[in-house]
Image (cartoon, rainbow, N blue to C red; front, side):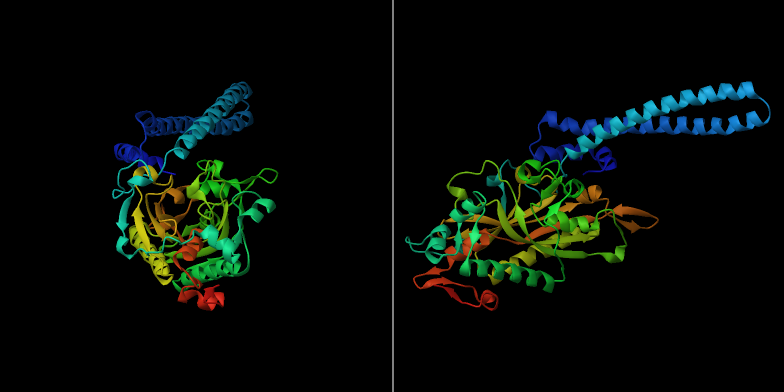
Length: 425
């Protein structure tokens, strides 16, 4: 959530950034509404403070008047105090309504895109930051997509997932389950070796937690909701892990804070149909290892590059062809200032599959989290960043497709100690 002081001081810059996100002229009125409501809030707060001060002063005088025998004057003041109490109560109601309206407007204003974010409407307008087109694997025409390989080698079963739960919930078995577990362990070991503290968080969160990282009220349609308990299944480990530091004031020497966590992730993915979502390309439950950093604002963009290097290194060890995209304004997430996506090449499908997003949220999440650090005599908002390192099941799919041979599916060397086997045959 953007601070009202930032909106007020950077109104035109913010409108320019929102145009990059394809906001209409009508939508841009949110900026002016935020400033107007903040002015109204300040005026009402000042009036309320003055009323309360007058009421308190008169209340003190009433006692003195009674003591000095000036009963009639005391009763007059008491009547004025009663009227002031009514006025204050009405003003408190108006102030709360204004604060609620302002909060709603602020919740509907996305983060300001970083100056390097390219203009564009959809994912087709994303910019290739790094690419290796010449290194793409060449498979014979007889190469199979991962859903056919899964049936041949009994690695996962989508039909059983439908039977047990519903569409989009794969069931892994045998060497498929072992490979999935191996990848999770490998990703966690890579993260902890890079200095990230491992966190094993709850898989359900309350409304305050989901709101603090920006999932609510923006993405409630994509989240699974447990009505009776008023809890949400997490769409990513970012949500509970980042909230570890909600309502916390840090010292400058606490930076950087580095956390990693493995969780299953649950996303409804409403309206996802077609050949591009076959197999594991898009599912409602998938496993992911997340990396999260909390950093000083002066160093957050250096940290973003460091996190890109980390994800890139993991993909290189898996020997998977990949490219890095800088997301355009129209494809940028609501809370992000700058996002890079990693895609791996699926040789049998002959298409790129997104496996990671690495983002700097600057102070946007921290404002909702009330996550600050001591700076001089006051406090400032910290910066938060996160990235997938990495997300399954598309990594799983690409490994199967790219490493298929007539003898079986060859396992990358880096995973041998985790799987206990070198080939799926």
